[in-house]
Amino acid sequence: MLVTSDDQVKAYIKKIMSQLNRWMTGGKISKLVVVITSKETGENVERWQFDVQILNKSDAAVPVKEPEKTEEQIQEEIQAIFRQITASVTFLPVLDGNCTFNVLVYADADSDVPMEWGDSDAKEIKNGEKVQLRGFSTSNHRVDTMVSYRLAD
Image (cartoon, rainbow, N blue to C red; front, side, top):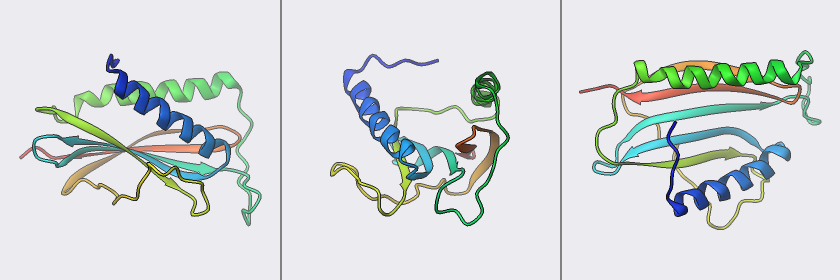
């Protein structure tokens, strides 16, 4: 697992996580995307998408009821996702050169958005391959995961 020692990257991630926490607890997110972009070409080379379904929303016509799970069961599902993400190295192309990343959040229209957050396109991978990964659920959320990547030339 890579861990950054760059204080600016740490501050950026901390700021993002703080805002995500507010949106998640407020039930305002439908999707979180992390896009990896080549610094040399500006091309999006990987796109990690986490679809968030908020269950039992008060404005839902028919609330979705997930069976109650223990914290241990939820942790096992999350661990399985981490194992699958780690194992994706077997099929994802090697990222050559320097890369950067962007975090995209699909939030409800009535969400309070900080001034430094801006609108963006979906940053899809052109002619990319998509792989659906595992998901997990709690009594409040269902999260499904997918990775898109650029096929080697």
